[in-house]
Every structure is written in structure tokens, then in C-alpha cells.
Length: 202
Image (cartoon, rainbow, N blue to C red; front, top):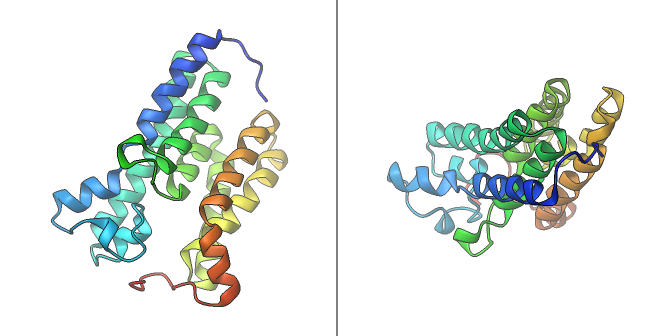
């Protein structure tokens, strides 16, 4: 945990800013703007890049990935620039919660993988790169997006400790728990052998 340097009111302000940034549903916005339909009616119904890819539009999926990651990174970097490490970590956590549980979508959001990676990259570039590599390894080995997410989340705490970012371990652990919780249905399908491969429509 970082040293708490700011008053509760400041921390709450950055928590709100982080939540609002994280709650922007870029996948749904891009799908509508690019005429791809309602993501809720496509594939898994999720608002993230993997489900956007199921529309067949790789550009929209790539933009969703970048923007969902970017909003997590922006929350951390803005809070750090105008506050400190305590506000940065609060904003990062709330950006993740905002993506997964956005008020605009009745708290039914995405699974948070891109936002998680964006937060990690902003917290510590080496850790973030390590998490991205872990995602690639998991996704390429199994050809399943959720495996990449689970491998990356599992690796994050180890990377934080190994690369000397111990004050972010609690945040990393919380983000990992959120990723695992949001992927609980995927974990069940992985156990049953029914989890779709990357690019499949269901």
C-alpha cells in the first residue's frame, strides 16, 4: 500500500474521476458509430474488444482494446500527476470497477482485461509489459482470450513483487480478484472444454 498523503475528500474525488473514466463503454459506442449493431445481441453480449472482434470488424476491436486500456492508464496517470501515488492507485481501482460495473449500463459492463492492462502499464511500465506478454503467451498457447486474461492476472502480483513495485501489490491483488470474478463463467466453460476460441462467434 502507498502512504496515504491526501485527505479523504481528495481520495473520493479521484475515486469518482477514475470511476467515470472507466465507465465509458467504448466498445458499445464504437459498435454503434461504425454500424456494427448492439453488442448485447452479438456473441457473448460483452462490451469488450473480444466480443467486438466477433462482429468481424478488426479495426473496431483494436480501437476498443486501445481505448479501454487507455482509460485505465489515463485514470492512473492523471491522478498521479495532480495528486500522488495514493490517488493514482485509488483512481486505477475505481476505473476498473467503472468498466466492469458502469452506472450507464445498469452496472453490467465488461470483464476488465484491457483496462487492467492499461492500469498496470501506467502503474509500472515493466510490470505492464510483463502482464501483456503473459496475456499473449496464454492466448497464443490456448487460442482462447480468457486464458490470456487469467494467465496475465495470475502473473501480475508476482511481477509487482519481482520488479520492486511492492506498494502496488494490494491494488494488484484486488484487480486480479476482479478479473477472476468477472471470468467465473469462462472458468466454468474452460473446465467443461466449451470455451470458444479467439474469433469464434459464440
